[in-house]
Length: 103
Image (cartoon, rainbow, N blue to C red; front, top):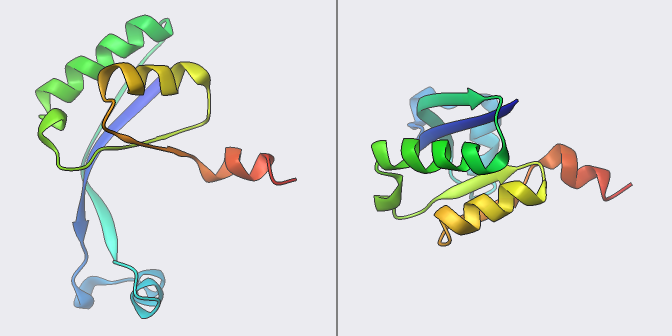
């Protein structure tokens, strides 16, 4: 099973900030949240899933975004797809899998 979630990020107004978000602001970091989340999934090969990544991204105008960020578990196929379809994107290893390399 492969899962993709496209979403936009928006700033959180001070009146709506959670305790965690207020602490981020105190550390001079932005208080952000995801909006317009759209999930896509399929049981498919990486190559075929890549077509879904590309097609859904086109439909959502991801290629026009000033910044694209992909968060993944470190599987080589994920980074290959990101590089193929969105070479300008920032690639980030998720915390759970990054932590495995710290132990």
